[in-house]
Length: 435
Image 1 (cartoon, rainbow, N blue to C red):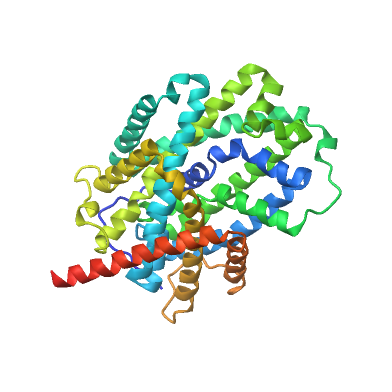
Image 2 (image 1 turned 90 degrees about the horizontal axis):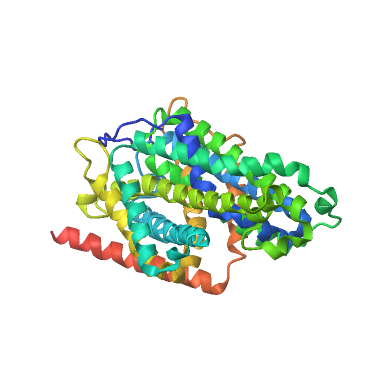
């Protein structure tokens, strides 16, 4: 079937390279600069197994996104997928989980990491007023770029992606000669509980590809572009992550725990001296900037799609008459990131963001299953996950396994949040009927 596909007034300008670049950009963030130490401290040299398990899980989830993304070509990504399959209420829940629980709070956290990285070189950015000014300038620039058009936004992200990958590839290439093979030796299979905890951390480090599909209404030929763009971006991300882990573990060995705040900077310092550490601090800053830029491009499309369906104020569905972009949604979203970046209130809800993403993935997989089992004519040339429903069920099992590692406090917090937005939905629908 060809699911919901309306004329939104948006231009389809994003091709395979552009989508692949946004997948890379939205996934590789500040986490890559601290992740090797976290993994090594939990699993030692066997940490590479965590990447393999996590990569396998993400592949099953990505495949489900490829199928439903090639069928549902309206802007909104995860939200519109779930809404198409299960209706407005389910879509409303996913939209709020993604827009606020994952998007706003996650980007606010990344902006603060960006400021902390810059403060290493320029201590003035430790001052709250200077940080606020920095956030305003950077987010204002992102708004300006994104309002002017998706094509310009993608080009900007492609440049940032290149700038982000160059120092990482530099560490991989030049770090090989500094690797000590005995640092990579491991004898015992890690305990299953330890493996699960590590994969849970890695899972969120790999997350981000789904944000790229928020701009699905601006993707050229989605049936072809979505599967290829996700595969291209996902393959590069996995390759970079696992090679970076091997290099960091191989160079630092057991000493990696001494550099848990910046293991890659320590590797770079071994290779190039103090200037290497400085380069990596700059690279971490660019990485944070790229992540937030990608989010400011993609996530406002959820607000745009939700406003078109009457779930958010109508002004968020307005398209710029000249640039054909959802400019008010972009401005609103960036403003919320600014508020939480400055206030720091996002820290209290950081756990909620992790739970939100797992539930979003679960909703999309269930939506894919429902759309596939409908008896309507399938969309011509749409991508279809091989192996029947085995892959989606494996993905569901993986998500359930990861959810089992969450604490009671995390589950209760998520449940309360969903209950609150459910009440908001029903009150909103009642108000609409009265008017």
